[in-house]
Image 1 (tube, helix red, strand yellow):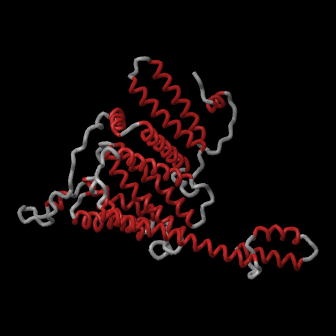
Image 2 (tube, one colour; image 1 turned 180 degrees about the vertical axis):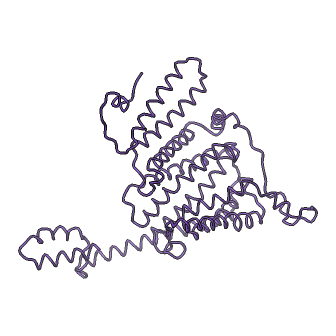
Image 3 (cartoon, helix red, strand yellow; image 1 turned 120 degrees about the vertical axis):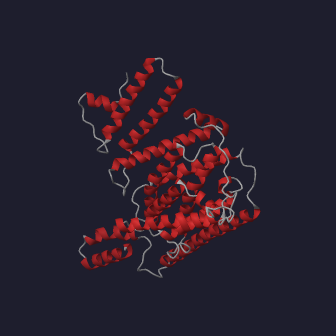
Length: 421
C-alpha cells in the first residue's frame, strides 16, 4: 500500500519542519484515511453507493487536513486555537468545490436526483405554505382572538432571533444591522412573486420580524458585545462618511450585498432543490456561515481601515463561495421561475443602484482630480515642503546623514520624517 511522504518520514525516524505545530495531524489523517479506504475496498462486497460516499468524505477530510497543515493562520482569530480557523477555511474550500461540482455538472433535475442519492428523504416536492392566507390580527369570530398571530410563533422564531443576535455580534454596528434587517423585508417584497414563503401579513413583517425578533436580537447582540468588551466596528454608517468616501461606500455596498445574499440564497436553494428548512444540509450551511463569516468580516473592516497586513484569504474564499451559491440559484431558477419582477419594484431597484454606482464613480473621479492637482502643484514647486515621493527622500537621507555636514543631514531627516507621517 502507498504511504504518504509525511508518514514515511515519520516511520524512518526523519525530522521534518512544518509551518504549524499541528501539521502532523494533517499527514497522519491522510495516511489513516487512505488505509481505511483501501481496507474497505479490499472487502469486495461493499455497496457501490457506500463506496462513492466514502470517497467523497475522504476527499473532504484530506482537503481539511491539508488546510490545517499548510494554510496560513487568521491574523486576529486565534481562540480556542489557531488550527480551528484553518479547519473552517478547509471546510469552506470543500463547500466551494461541492457547489462548483453541482454548478458545472448537473442541471436542476439532475441536482435533485443527486441530493436524493445523498439523502433518500430528499428529491420530493415540498408542500406550498403561504403565510398570508389570513391576515386578520384580531379575529372576533374565534375565541382566541390572536390565534393567527400565535400560530406564527414556533421554533423558527427563536432561530430568527438568535440569527440576528449573531449577525449583530459579527458586524458590531447596531445602525448597520438595523438597516440590513429592514432592507431584507423589502427584498422579501421584491421576490415574493417568485417565492410563496415571502408573502406575509403586515403584522408578521412589522411586529414579529422587525420590531420583534430583529429588535430583540440586535439588542441582545449589542448587550453581549458590551459585556464581553468586544471592539465596535466603524463601518461609516450613517454618520461616518460612508456617502463622502468612495472606499467606505464600496465596502458598505459590498457588505449589504454579502449579508443579504446569505439569507436570500438560502430561500432560493431550498425552494429550487426541494429541501425542507430543517434538513441537515441547510442546518450545516447555516452553521458554516455562522462561524466563517466572523473572520471574513474582520478582514473586511481591517481592509477598510488600512490595518490589514496580510492577504484577505478568508474574505476572498467567502466571496467566491457566495458567488457560487448565487450562480446555483440563477442556473436552477431558469426552469422554475417564469414571472418577472413587478415593474414598479424593478424601477425602484434600478434607481437605487444607479444612484449608488454614480456616487461611487463621482467620488472616485473627484479623488483622482484632487490627486492630480496635488501632483501638479508639487511638480511645479508650489509646495516643496511636501514631496510626492517620500521614499526618495529617505534614500537621499541615508548617504547625507553619514557625511561631514550634520546640518544638511539633520534637515533632510526631519523633512523625511514629516512627509512620511
